[in-house]
Image 1 (cartoon, helix red, strand yellow):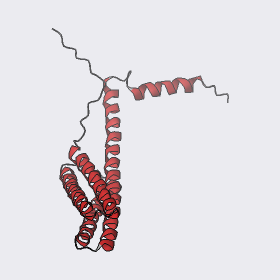
Image 2: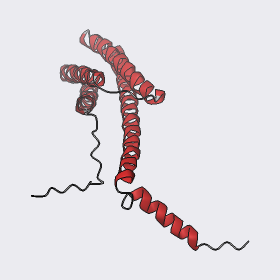
Image 3: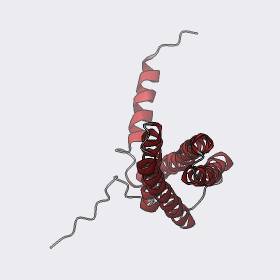
Image 4: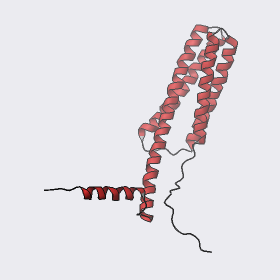
Length: 185
């Protein structure tokens, strides 16, 4: 009959959906793993299997990059220039890595094993660096958002129910402790 109209101090702030970005990052990781397996196959004289594995890994990396870019279209960037640069550098490094792996793959398919392996390794290094930069940039943005969300939630919580808000409880406890300390001047 009567609805409970008490406000709950639990904040249900909406977080941005970053599933496409996370999916893309996972796909890039899998692609890098496949490229490494392909290099191992080539080093064990299984050239054909290695080339197929590198091609498969390259496709996964390209698909993952397109998922990341698609996810970033809906992603609200923060004013924090450092994290935005990390994402940009990560994407550029991944693109450079893709080009390097493609060139190496072309050499491998044309029986230039030494040059091909070197180019694939250089491309793989760029892919890994790009992935690290991308992950770091996204994590910095998410951490900043979480910090802002908590601050906003504490402000709302304090206005609605100041006696049970975690920040208020901490402040009251601090005042109690400070009041117990004697200052003899």
